Length: 371
Image 1 (cartoon, rainbow, N blue to C red):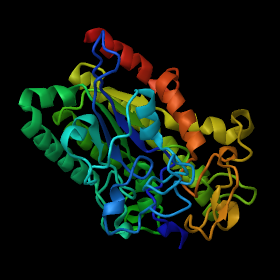
Image 2 (image 1 turned 60 degrees about the vertical axis):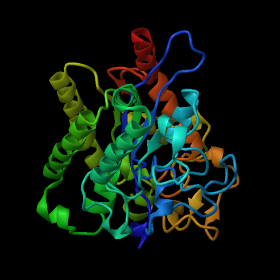
Image 3 (image 1 turned 120 degrees about the vertical axis):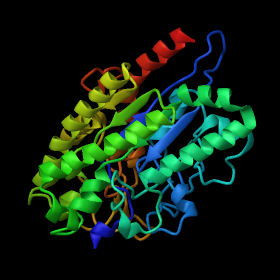
Image 4 (image 1 turned 45 degrees about the vertical axis):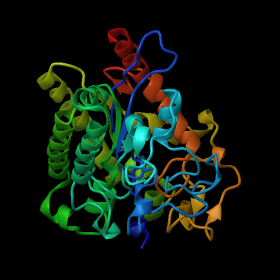
């Protein structure tokens, strides 16, 4: 069944980022760590080390990556964390499960993300062995213990407090849980409005733990237009390629409540710890007017099969477009590298319509002025 697609879905940018930065004035390069949490939108290869079906470790994944080889990223090339790292002048941080993450590499940060996961522990159970959010945060705590043994308690605390953290999660809770099958357990338990409220409550607990573990700059991205990804067009869309009304309703309910919750946390902490990245708006721009952004289509995935290339897996047997830059979507759920670049452009310099209360460039400037 198409719904068993081993991806954390979320093109929808159930994304969440936590960000903090160390910039030493007078130095040529910013000193910082970068931490990444979430699902397949930001997984850079952790699932390669797990016995799970949610993997992107075979071609044509990675076809446009610098090595032209699959890395575990659900992309034809670079993903959002890679592109943010580039903007910050650093290299992509390693997956936490990578054996190469040791020594001084630890001080650069780590990527804890795992394709298939959601806010809820029961999201993505069909993918078997994946790193759920609570476990990602357990690993973050473990990471800090490893760094403490290397540089001491005080320096570790500073490194974490001033780090950049990216968290992307939420879309799978709809696509791979509530709407996974007709009459799913969660849809029988909750009406959609009540399910959204439940997700927000559970997400708030996770963000509180991020804060307790030292996160002090947190960019949280909401879901993109869930009903408009090629997979949903193929399975639930209208006869003329219209987006799925039901999944669009889920996004419309979820994103404003997420923003409201983040604002409430900032009031509680008395500072702008959490920054909302309104990725639904970012996505809608190139989905509704792809030509304005150089795409020939925002409906058909570059790699896939069936209607809109929205069914099944992206494999060597799939239909594969020759020019990925012309497609907003790489596979049935995930944006292409070019689309990821558009999203990161807005994260860096977007107006309050896209980044609330400030964009990442403003965050970096503020943090530099404090150092």
